[in-house]
Amino acid sequence: MLMEGKKGVVFGVANKWSIAWAISKALHREGAQIILAYLGDEEKIKELADEINAKIYPCDVSKDEDITKLFEFVGKEFGKIDFIVHSIAFAPKEALQGRYIDTSREAFRIALDISAYSLVKIVKEAENYLNDNSAIVTMTYLGSVRAVPNYNVMGVAKAALESSVRYIAYDLGQRGIRCNAISAGPIKTLAARGISGFMSMYEEYPKRAALRRNVTAEEVGETALFLLSHMSSGITGEVIYVDAGYEMMGM
Ligand code: IMJ
View 1 (tube, protein in one colour):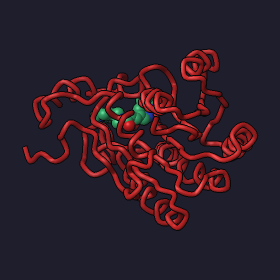
View 2: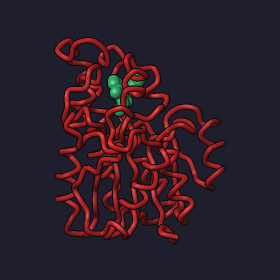
View 3: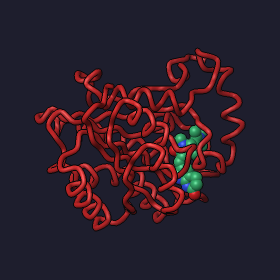
View 4: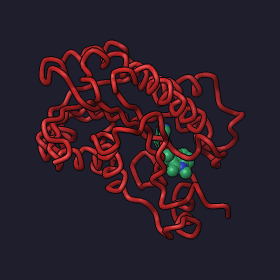
């Protein structure tokens, strides 16, 4: 029971294919108590939450007030918390195809706001609720450091997010609070399925990855559990690749 007595908030569960859901299940299995901060269909989230005895609270991360209210709820329910999972990204669909240089000012703003700034604001609002030695994990993707066709402005947002992880790690390091990112290989989530070229990339992946296969959301869940537990007490400000050995290959 790695997370016995630990409490925290998970952002980004939308459905049972969500990476945040796989992380939540791993945390629950190890004894964690969880609040799911969700956007959208309350009924659907409630059904999932019941499976892991989690509480739910609505939160649109593009609204400062929503984040403030969420942490007031967290304070009332839990008092202090020990972990935060940020598994949220959004860019307008038209920005995730064609040429990057066609990205509009508005699409750029939205992608960076929802996918990168949200972590900054969440951490700021959480600061007074976080116990010393607590941990934060966010999700990123290789498109932050390589030009992946169609990933476009999301790659730029993930680069900002990864940099943010390092500055957050520095800011909160004096309290022993750690912040890390997981860079996952392609996973068939709802956010990925609709993307042009995703499926062909997913099918090509096993040919190039050292492990000759794709990664699963469950594998990401186990790594998040590691990064949120005392097992990783010496690791902060890092981007950990959970990608079946794709990023490190030279051909
Ligand atoms: C997304 C776009 C292009 C290529 C992509 C992806 N590849 C992978 C993804 C190769 C693996 C999935 N991914 C890593 C993401 O971060 C997806 C983010 C995303 C997805 C959508 C779809 C629906 C929409 N906006 C989105 N915003 C962000 O309208």
